[in-house]
Length: 293
Image 1 (cartoon, rainbow, N blue to C red):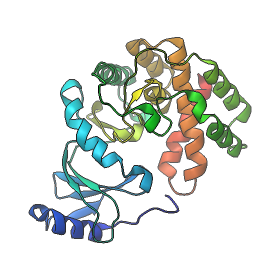
Image 2 (cartoon, rainbow, N blue to C red):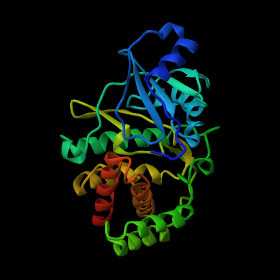
Image 3 (cartoon, one colour):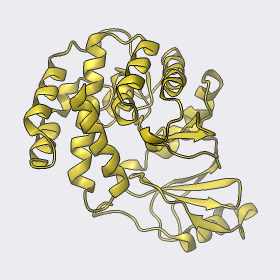
């Protein structure tokens, strides 16, 4: 998915495991299909998963998740990834990498949600619980890839993305939404925890009910508006309204969240247009919902 991406395969994973974690050597290894852009995933036996950064900017996520997930888990109402071990560079692979316990579940789209209103309530409960956790020592938003910081820091990239999608989206309408989001008041309260990448691919469902949130590489402390992206990425109008009501979000934060949803999608689509059809499909749907309101 990236020009300078590090290639991985099951053979490499087997070599890394055998060299660094011989207690897990010999287990069957299979690649996990995923639209995720930062990490390659490999199932290791029935109960483990290996996660390897694909690209240099994702390498720092390993240490962040291993440090913070165990500290956040006791306060949150849904399951989180459970890091078990950090692997070192080896066998020609240049980054630190992770072994986690396997989490069961599946990603769902809007059309597959059995009860969007219940999903909205469950997700809002998780986000509110996350925001209540003490932020002392948390990774600051300014260190977090333009999430949780003033929306204007994404202005140049967002306008460029909108321009690249002429003929694919309504450029005039998208620009109007973006400019409206930029006019919204910024977050002036105390910084809070945010997940940072709250998208359908990072939500796991079982029997139609939300059970787990994964991929905390974008975790940070700052403006919570980025976590509202999911309102337009997963829900239609009814679920979106239920989500907003459950969160009790003010108008300015909601507008910034809408701006984040648009920004993420219009930057994502041209970059991954030829390499990530699943992710692009999610992003195009998000733009449609953003323009609805």
